[in-house]
Length: 271
Ligand code: MF3
Ligand code: CO
Ligand code: CO
Image (cartoon, rainbow, N blue to C red; front, side, top):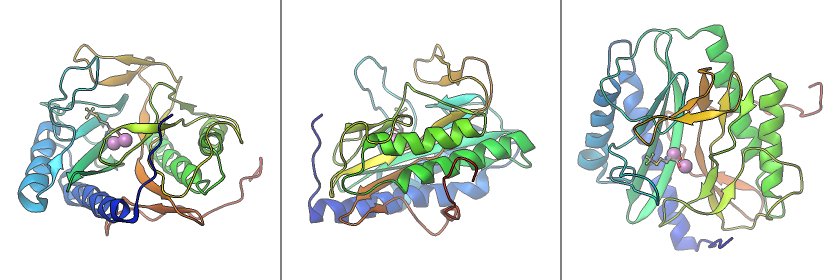
């Protein structure tokens, strides 16, 4: 793996990019209501990024090898959609859950974050999945410090998800990020403690677990982007961009509207 350590001036710009990405989610939150279309949410996000922030939506026209260009300014993944849902005519209804994933480019640097939102009132099962996935992301983030390994992060996420009867999607992972949208290292959301590359101060990467209520298997839709659960069970995802600091971590994608981190609890088997 070809991991680039960030300089102090890179880090300053990544802080700004991260906060701006999170502020797009703050902005869009009040619009997520029954009756709105995912396409309308996308247009609102696009205009906020371009006209208000002066940022560039990194997903618009993004075309990694083997993919057609992504056609929108955010990803909107509803219910059994795992990730990369393309905004369009879909009308949100009471009880849906939606992930909105935003990546901005600010002064050539990327900030990448996503949250789950409830459309009206969620079911008990949907709420439990979204809350557990949020906790899983944070348990992974809290492992981040120099000398810890990528496997430590993945293990913390996998243990919480599977301990709650859910499953971890394997085909997509967190990623290094900077002046490139996706770079090394790959941050798996499953693994064994001590396995994989050691973290070093100055690395910046995302932690973005996708957790399914049913089995972990996924399918790709014919649009070439939207990923869904094979069994059509609900799926949830949260994402932060994280810096490894000399003493631990700094979450770069926080803003006024970020939900508070969960209260840290013991991670013993029966805790
Ligand atoms: N933001 C996604 C991630 O977390 C990537 C979306 S790429 C797109 O890595 F093309 F689907 F938008
Ligand atoms: Co990402
Ligand atoms: Co993202």
